Length: 282
Image (cartoon, rainbow, N blue to C red; front, side):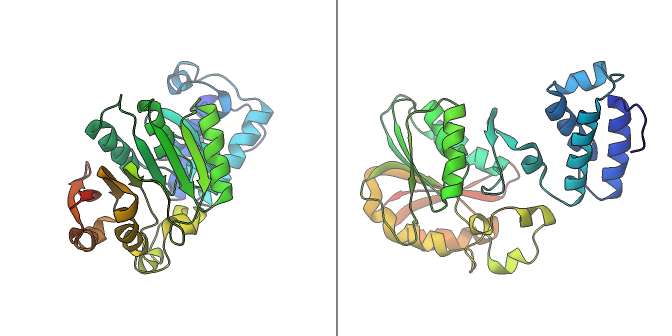
């Protein structure tokens, strides 16, 4: 970027081509989101004010962001936030980036259950807190317990709960593989690490910036589900229900694991992939 006056439209055109050349998906959307973040404006303003020149500081920030993106840093980490069910959540490399599939998981829990009830809800592996906080916003009378085995992740989740003004979530440090909650819960929800060690060798470059412990169990992708089969018998209330996000390739294996002690069904996502295991005690 040589010394010249760079207008919004110049940045969009140059960056789109540059990102495209570096094989970045959705290059125009990438630069639009970077610009709206740096300039603090809505996307429509990029085109109504396309002639507006950027300051040296704005230009420098955008340039740094583009270079990170070309190195395949996830856009969400570059922006420091992600939208999840129409709310902005802080994200950084200490937490997994929430995905649309997890939005579907949360929407399913909301649709199935009574918003006014006083549930005890457990979120296992809360990460950024997106599941727990989104549920807390809807189930105002319920108490949500959110577990994670990363203090860095819990710090992000707590900040998100403050920013989004949620008070009915308790964040607790715990490793679900070695400890078991003492209470019984009406709703249990989890998006556990489910990428197998074999699959980790084939993941896209952006995923390598996300916390490995939140992606994979360093095994066959089933370790957390095996643990859930064991402990849900003790921590699910009589009429309780659980919702687990699935690795679509392992869905039938997981269903089989649960079928002996639980009544389970698999729910497909918007792309008709098996994505959620819903279950109750037999």
